[in-house]
Length: 274
Image (tube, helix red, strand yellow):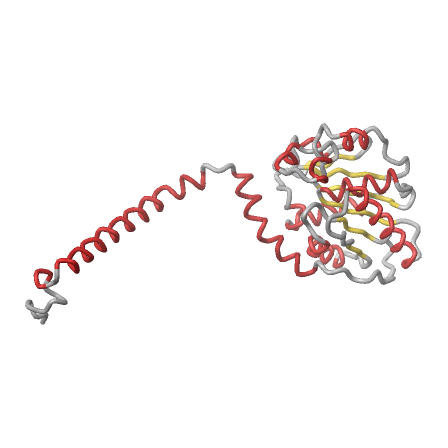
């Protein structure tokens, strides 16, 4: 039983300064508990007040960090002939060649045994990236002995691929180009940054206007995959181009193309079409 004369248990026996500290701690504890209860009551409301597409985009961003584990460049090897053109993946702004690891594994199981993922050097301009892609495609063709490749490009990668095939004489070297959420007509989300590449991606930029004044090469099959829920490509129809097949992948986010198995299967079906 506590001794009522024990200063540790009898508040009246404590020095005045200790009693003040004890009262302050008790009040602070009550305030923390009240604050926690308030946040608990309103956290759900705050979460639900955010647009669902924003929540979906933010939830997928951490998953993309896993792809950085395979960001290093691998040598271009001949691979095993599989009855298909070699498949080249082109990543987007802020991404890496590892972005396409899940999709390449899926397509490998489906029979595409020769897949290649380019790695762009940091700080390259849009045209430098297009030139690097053109060199990479020529190297893949030479090593594999194939006259044509298929291209699958995400986001900025689609614009890079477009510049490569229209301005660097690759029209006959590419059989099919699939662009996934690519800002062909520019995107207003590029206004949130002010780098050379993002300024070039604004809808009213000279680069975007000049690029869209050029037709696709005649014998190139182009498929633009887009989504009405993509918050990076604004307006959403900016992912479409004249002369290309359009596939609406709604409700994909900007990252679902890379992370959602339904996106991988969509790409497989597109590539299998005659």
